[in-house]
Amino acid sequence: ERAVVEVEQAKRLNPEDITVLRKCVLVYEISGRRARALQAFNDYLEAGGPAEELKINPDLAEMMADPEVQALMKSQRRP
Image (cartoon, rainbow, N blue to C red; front, side):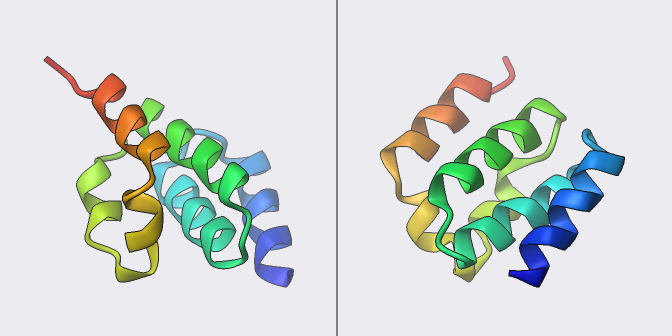
């Protein structure tokens, strides 16, 4: 729970920082907050974060297989 509070505080201070957003995805997913992890993942992609960095993280493997994540990655692909 403390990690959630800390990443939320960091996100309030740096809402477009891809490092902070990446940590939000990880903390939310590990703590069982998939909906928040998905939103943070979307924010991460919109801020220019590379999906590849998250795809290689074994702690996010289940989330990366989620059809909603697949759709987000597809919609954020740059031409």
